[in-house]
Image (cartoon, helix red, strand yellow):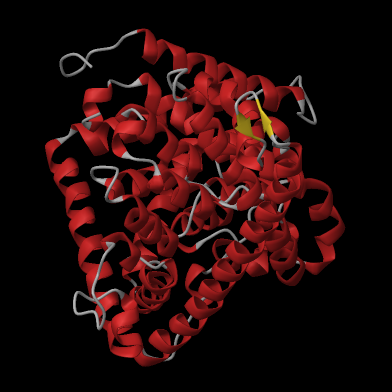
Length: 432
């Protein structure tokens, strides 16, 4: 790839992805005459600077590597609890039968889903201790100052990065009815552009064997996709400053626990619900895909290979993968991952990418796809957002129904924009 800091045509290729994403969002905008040029330049600059700082500055880079160590420690600690409950089914070295395939010890239900449970409990405890509150408020201040967001939406945007697409807006529940249409759309879009803290750890666990410093990439991807989500949401539904009026809000009033034990218990309960939803969604969507593939199999081989959902998605999204910066020889596989993420959830896409042998995909392509996949924008999330916001702000349900599909598109393209920004930077910065 050349020496450190080397740029080439492959980096310039990512400019196509940036232009394509902005053009599509402008084309579906509710007011094409109000393109936020200053916000576009500022948001993409913030993204690039954040990535450069996190991976280029020695102190911050060491901190990101420390995140990887922490994730490994969290995963191993979780496995201790899983092994206590499920015994050898958790994949412990001591198996009661002769082991012929070490890879078979990695069972998703025992290796990944329990991590969500532990992280949700830990996040609740850190919130009760005010540690996560301070971190969220700091990010909210940054979004407010750099991107012109009002206080409550800025806080909810920051909380979404760590807590999830519906959990983040809960922190400003009392404020949701008075949000402008643009602000409400932005919250839904940002929620689909990012992932929650619990799933970050799960994704890093899936990718750690095929992507060096996977935890750092996943964490960075979720953080820097938030400005992208804000930008694309503002393009599609431009801001109307005249109807945005200030309202006092206490961020600590939204989520309170009586004690540390109460936080752990409620966090565990919330985590269990998320864990069951993720597992159930994966079973249903993978089953439906297999069903469709079986039907397509009736037509036999076409161009030397059987028809399948994954193959069709690869053809459909390969040009987008190339525009992001992926070399054309990796574009069909990368395009298939993008399609799987949109139709079958990002969990399935990460599992499929984790199963691609190291030598079968360029290191740079794998890095770019990690950023492109790291978001909740998929068909299942449309239902999650409709259900969640119908409870949080029932009086605006009809309005949300009319915008949630556009929000999914904005969230999907936001992660593609993030990947394109990363593609502009020297590959050596990430060790790819």
